[in-house]
Image (cartoon, rainbow, N blue to C red; front, side, top):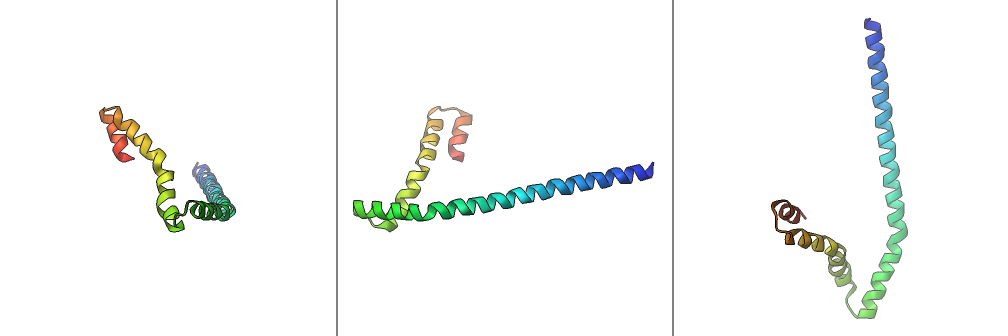
Length: 98
C-alpha cells in the first residue's frame, strides 16, 4: 500500500515537472518571438517618425516622446470617458482604474 502511494507521488511530481517545463519553454519562446517582432518593426517605425517630423516641421523628440504616447493612449482615455459618462458605481470605478 505504501509503495503505491510513493509511486503515485512520484507520478504527480513528474507530471508537475513536465507542466512547469512546458510553461517555461512557452514563456521563453514568446520572449524570443516578441524580441524578433520588435527588431523587425523598430527601424520602419523610426523612419516613419523621422519622416513625419520632417514633413510637419516638428522636432522628432516631440513626436517620439509626446505625440506618439498621447496617440497610443487616446483610446484608453476615450474608453475611460465612456465609462464615466454612464454614472454608476461600477463604471466610475472602472473609469478611475483606467
